[in-house]
Image 1 (cartoon, helix red, strand yellow):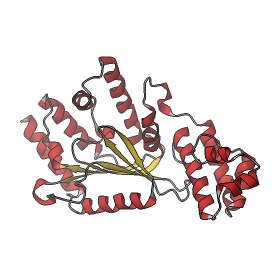
Image 2 (cartoon, one colour):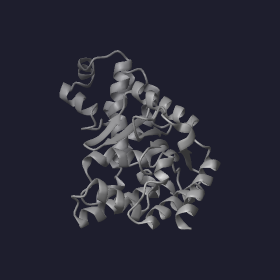
Image 3 (cartoon, helix red, strand yellow):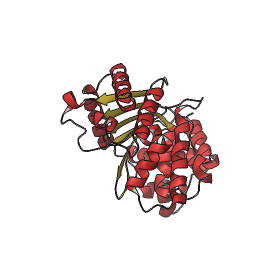
Image 4 (cartoon, helix red, strand yellow):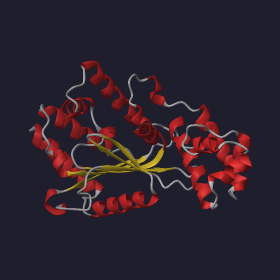
Length: 288
């Protein structure tokens, strides 16, 4: 089983119960009849507000025609009930980030396209500080430090001993030239990217100025999260971030659209070895 906290497992249990019901051609009213409960209770089960008990799991999976999945499903429900999100001890973490932080811990693979800055999982502390100061100048020093600390803690997922996610990052070459207030901060950041490429689970590919041009990813940055085999039937989640909020795309057709886009963009990127050479050359330009 992947390393995950309660949030991701609760999400999966709820979505899967709704998906299985719909696949079986059943209405909520029919589930109410079999469970002898209120429709509100069924809605809560399908929206992660409540977890089913063991008897409800057995009844529902038999009703949905997938009784053979009962034991595995009970394990996931237990993990959702007993699990603890690692960021619970961090002060002031916005609730909107719960799913993102949980997905980073639970993902088997993360495929991202980044147009402006390296992804948060790859940023150095000094670079992250400059990104945050530019994007949220209203933050107090205490809030800023808390956000930087949280971002640095998130990166532990890359080097954990148990099943670290495979991370594929498509990075616009312009990111290598976007000036920081202190050139040393950019140099340190690019050197950090080079170091990360030595990890067997991290792959960075640069989209060069001279050949990528206008491409399929022109609409902006996104990340695709794919989960392990224990989350049977889960199509994954796409995460996008805008100035006004975070968006989680869970419709299978939308997710496939983003997967197709990522593949098209990758075709125009340098391969990992060429990308390392590009990064090394840019570091040399800045530091000499």
